[in-house]
Length: 445
Image 1: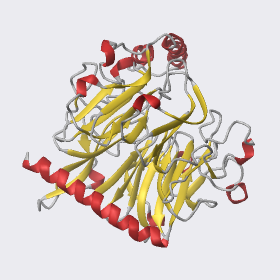
Image 2: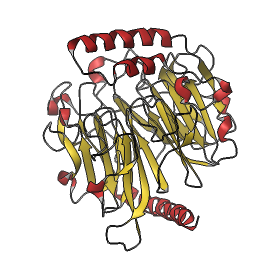
Image 3: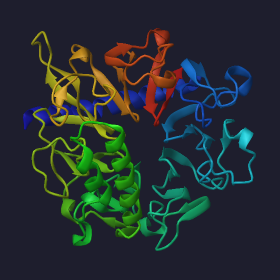
């Protein structure tokens, strides 16, 4: 227990340092950089620089943003940025009105960062994004959402699948929301005092045993049929047919339209949350890491296959968590190679098709990313099939799939182990986040 308390104290200290440094770098300004897949405009780069829908193979400054950005968020195909004055900017895909500028906005302007409309009376402190929905938290703890979701991801009430302008989630009135995380069709929200709420699509127990409704997703059953088959043209065709059938059946799966308390975690103080495509991670105050949802790729990291939230089989206390599409990441306390006390390390598990775990070994077992041994990781984020981390030295490390330049290394090569992004050497990196196939870096100027 004393180790866990020390970890929590260190995390509080890091938060204090971050708040202190924020005051310092806000006076000199910040800059957002992006790299990776530019096909949806999520990079926010002008067509004159990279061409329409082109990719960026190295970190490139996002022009047109204010110089006081305090945080960034990467959705699947769009991006959000919050300013020190409580304004929210967005760019990228807008087919589901997730940019908050309406569908009438010309398609060729979606890559241009613009202020989200409808939040003039809200002092935004944080923002979060998924594939089809965006969310903002006001300084009063209120939650605002917009976009389209047929699976209740907005949390605005039964049958409401679209919000073209930011709309307040009235069901959470009186709660102070600290963080939101989106999966493919489900949402988790954590309050300042550690309560957990969930809503949206609840197959596989990704929202826990909410209301006693726990069913396996038809898509999971479809994947399991072909998971261990030798891949041939015929098995691919079978897989495609089964997935289409599963998607059709999913339309009848139960949906939680309004935010509900995750009852099985009542009385447990939650300090961090992360949603993958169809799984969830929850970090508790006592250092316990819980997982729920689909386990097709081993992304739950536990031998216990019960639906609902159960502890991940991890031997180190975690201090932060993140999820990619089908893989999971955690910053943990582990013995340093020199044996001179504890140092943070990154532990990974789950889908590893493109080496997004950054290590060899069993995919379903949480294991340390040894390529970062000796480094002190402070931030980690997962994309579709790549991962990114920031160390206490301000260095950015990347690994996994390099297609479309999503590793920022100037090529499309995959990296099986973490490699430092040396083009950012000398920069004071404040934040690094991954969307599906693009990344955002926030640096102090």
